[in-house]
Image 1 (tube, one colour):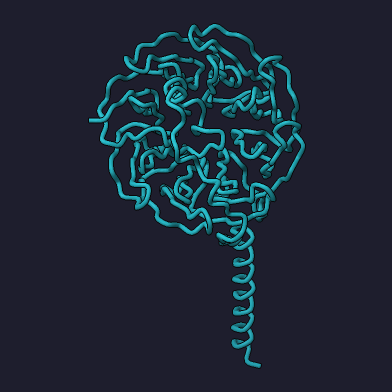
Image 2 (image 1 turned 180 degrees about the vertical axis):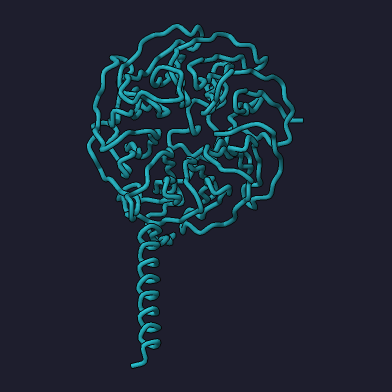
Length: 417
């Protein structure tokens, strides 16, 4: 056989083997999306609440927790504000505001990255009281029955975290700021959730806690395989929370017994991590992963129902409205996924990575980018309605009178123009 021909055939063989290996590696690093169905574990009657709460409750505690409700849907049916907005007041937190405030008793309560905690008069923007915990804060508080519950991380400054340091859950009097008690755990980064007198949260000590607020003692704890950084969601007597071990856990809220656990897709180099807080609606658990994909699991079974990839990390917790799942990606786009199938209904090029969660109110979805801009889009079409030149993580919360927009270091009280 001609020598040149042999060399050519060998070269083609080497190229073919290399190409096949490259395709195999790519597929191992990028598992295929999974399309869902509206006929499997999709309960349309279990969507976000569409009716408003009793007026007394709305006035007393309009926005009591991160994500608005226990299911963390981030849809607020009680309020009908729409952009454009005018600025009424500004409070300078002097360091990063990574998570939005809660609003209750005519105040907004918010912590800064370096450990300052503010109780701000919702009407005037005056600071009613302020505490310096001298510990990093990277989560929203929870407020109920005159008490504010705030997680604390390791001592500030927060450039390099001390993972072995203790963290605390602190309970404060909402009127005066007086510290009522504190519970010691590992570093606590998760926004807590109070249901039926039990405060649920996770910790870097790899545990999920169910803490009795009367006795300040755990009713139960559950050990995962790695840090727990996302917040818990509650629905149907079950607590749902993800861990950096690559699993989402469904635990009996009363006993802590494992009902199911489900993993992210396996890939070359390991699974992605769960940082985003889950949102529960339509009988499903929706949660983004650092592998760049949005996942939907059956809330009762834990079965993987759909997976849809984006071009970057999904740190953004999802918002839910009208059978649509809303979340941003580090690829610079904001997405509206069909809650039944995972298909992308629309996407919006935001010009910067998106890390924080959205808010949905009166048909408008709000989000911020790491390029310090906040957007308001029509939630059905994705059409841009309004922008604001500040904001970095979760954008805004509301009460009946105002919206409260979170800038990089400033909190803005705003009203309709």
